[in-house]
Amino acid sequence: MRLKSRFAGPLRGRARPPGDKSISHRALILGALAEGTTTVDGLLEAADVLHSADAAKAFGARVERSPEGRWTIEGAGGFKQPPETIDCGNSGTAARILIGAAAAYPISARFDGDQSLRKRPMNRVVAPLTQMGARFDSARGTLPMVVHGGKLKGITYRSPVSSAQVKSAVLLAGLGADGETILVEPERSRDHTERMLKVFGADFDVVDIDGALHPRIRPGKLKGAHIYVPGDPSSAAFPIAAALIAQKSEIRIEDLLVNPLRLGLIETLLEMGASLTFEERRDPIGEPIADLVVKTSRLNGVTPPARRAPSMIDEFPILSVIAAFAEGETRIEGAAELRVKESDRIAMMVDGLRACGVDAEELPDGLIVRGGGPKSVRGGANIRTHGDHRVAMSFLVLGMASKEPVVVDDAEMIATSFPDFAGFRRR
Image 1 (tube, rainbow, N blue to C red):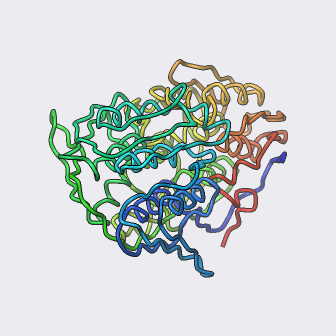
Image 2: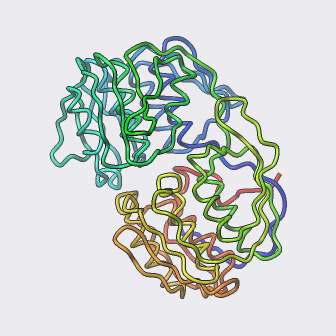
Image 3: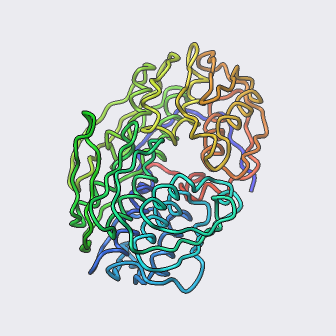
């Protein structure tokens, strides 16, 4: 399905973004692992997350949705032998976290996904899980893959990358390992799994290694819990960007997750001169929430520190679009992970920006965008998305402030994370 975006007038009003995808995946997976009943309100009902719901059922949990939108998971107290292949669709999060969870149990589970997911590296979770005692059948370290779990031993794993997916896989495997499991990473990645493990009653804490705190888990059972899913900051990045670059706009993003490890984009936009104001901060669920007021702003190019990359890795595509409307150079580094997302997002964004008349170039671990300020972007391009939802949404936002319309070749995959993106409406 092709989709066209053209110049927009001022954006006004208030809206709530879809439920956070990271929390939604984890709520379903931990609910399936737990004993008893887990209820989830605000779950993101997008294709990626629904694959996790189907996986929870395949591993023995009972999963139901009420007409009012509340999800209930009756956990099996651990994963059971699945009767069929676990289809993770396009979701690397579902695949990697589920592989780690399955490794803790004496089962053999086959995982697969779509053609895009089959190209994404799984060795980053295979390596630590193999050290713990799991075995894997895979031709190239990618999906399809069979995991043979059980009889794991706890380890201290020094991850070469800062990845919440790797961390989650190792910690969930540690639930069934003999002894304690510790995950050490170069920079802190998002911590939703750690926060949720506490809610589910895991024997979890942190330990000081080399002057930094790292997560530690000991084997044990989880107990069902109630989870509320706030708005996803990665999805909110798109209306935020649109309001910043569409002239005379002012919007209010409601019920937004403001976990400090997810605010790299907000920190960077503030450094660029963006008018962003948090209001009504609250913390009812162990995850901080607030409303965010966004106003059109005159922005300047910046170079965010590479150490910030883990807290904004999904937002780099839309940041590069915002940078096109800023004055001066924005230099993004420390983001090599973008090369192995749903597509090579570095190459995809640079090619698309150039097609829209923007001065952009690739770096091995990022990109440079030389912006010309408001009203400087020509647009007028037909963008090939290669099935990447964040690339598609980023260029559709660009089209809202460019001189000529922008067309993306395929918008269907946007439903994996933002089901109503095209029809997103104010309250």
